[in-house]
Length: 439
Ligand code: SF4
Ligand code: SF4
Image (cartoon, helix red, strand yellow):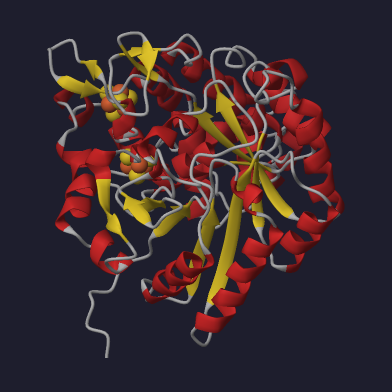
């Protein structure tokens, strides 16, 4: 019997090529990590792959195991590596176990064979695109500084041709941040995507230089400004809330809905009170506290010498997760949108509050504006969901020119509280707007 402590569900991002990538995106935080492994060939061996898959399975009590690949560029390992990973999942699977394989890629190396493989094995593929050509090529360039847009789109069309499940990851940076509507329309109308992840591109500087460490209180000129981030999210949200709820899924908005519902977890570590369940595994078996903290101070140990369960359950990792909450400045503790923001990610907490306390998030003003802006629509959505109605009904409150009819609110009586959360009776609030024919 295995007496090692068991775990709640964890998420490990494995990096089989470490920081090695075929591109040279100018804002990439991971390319700089190469210095931590000066003599490495940056390839996960088959022996380590087997150890990793078996330990990952042993680390899960439940039946669902996510096997997540990232980089650098993981497809540089070649298809054979991932075929072996699938074989090993079969070898070590417990009865009833279901695997969710995910891979984050720049998409430039994909071909029919890759896409057939992804489809056959139910991979969820994340593909990085920063918007239409000019916005994408502003920073997502090859090693010679050349554009990559056409290659990425070719990869994405192949994924679509083979009906591979995919989502799009947009890094919001100083170049594309002022163009939220352009990015939104491009992804929806030209690409045809239904799942979007947005991450803020932030590079901290020490003495004017980007380093592989999460240190420094100034930022690069590629870094999104707090006001840009807030405005980007707001414009993106406004487009979504009027037209696409239930059709397009934006991870940040889905997390917000969960927080407005008081669901316990937002599904995104950055918007939860504590973290520490999303770890990073380097190509040589080194395990780190988080993908954003792959640096010596956050090294937990090697899975070659110790079992992953012990490393994830170590006091060092527990402390890392709790620190997110314990280091929250008073300004955040007293903030009206704390329930939705939770001070976001500790890696971005390098400002000082007006009262002189350290640990304020660089993006604070943007988040505050965004969360205040979405309060009313999110209250409506939460109210609809609690009543068993589709969240998409929220669009009836916001879509311009929409003629409201009482048939749209079949389960709301005139004297019941309005679904918008105003605490007014429906007839005194949104019920006032229904057409006369509806009674
Ligand atoms: S440090 Fe940030 S990215 Fe890492 S687990 Fe915590 S909240 Fe998530
Ligand atoms: S909006 Fe600002 S003050 Fe409020 S919780 Fe977030 S980072 Fe803290």
